[in-house]
Length: 314
Image 1 (cartoon, rainbow, N blue to C red):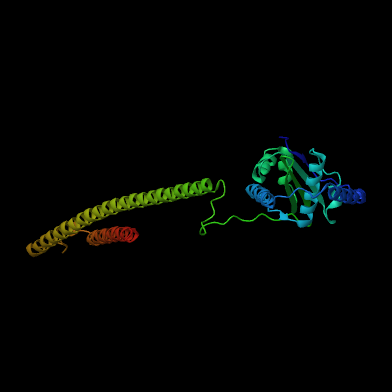
Image 2: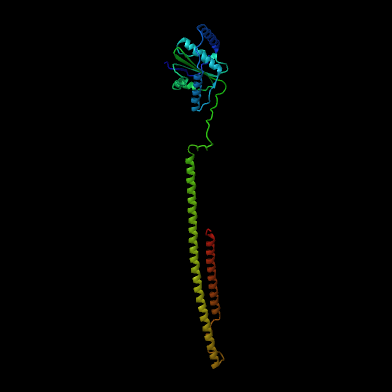
């Protein structure tokens, strides 16, 4: 068994196209003189074509079109290798295929029993595989059994654009997987949002605690002010009552002295002991001010409590 060989890239020899056509004519005449050409195995060639496009699809490449003109060139060279009894490349392949190509390549093989085995042999050879996965649009294939062995040829050519890959069928319409790193980004965003929410909650708790402390301090101050005001009020009232009692007692004493008699000059014996009438008025003013202060302190306390209740969540 002879290992397959490959032409790894295009072979632009268009200037010698006439030489290739002449060679094909000579080979055809020789085949007529020597007898009928060996039969080509169409089924094996189809298997080669199928395996070729499967390899391209697995690599994300579009399929190659089966070209009848390229098939004819491939079959002509396969028969020539049979006649020569040796494997070799077609030196005139670029001039024998239809014009208009922009790239051309060729694979040849000998000795594989089936088209699938021949395709595998090409796939396992780096140079041949490069042609199979190359930037071509068309392919011609020949598989010939003759002389107790087999001969194979693949002719590749690019006409126009390289075909686009065919999307593999999918069941249903599953959601596309997340791009690499998207899950990590989403997790980081969620963590950041959680940290921000925790910070906002901590700030709200601190504000509530400060409000409660302020309310407690204000309540304590209001209570103290009210107690002081009430104490002052009671003291002032007690002072007013004492002054009034003293004044009443002294007035009675003056009246009694007046009734007992007068001095020679007609003045009261106790005229110099009359109390200051402004003293009770001053004490009453102090008492009134203290009462107003107590009322204001109680109002402040009530307002603080009302505001605190309004600030509580429902």
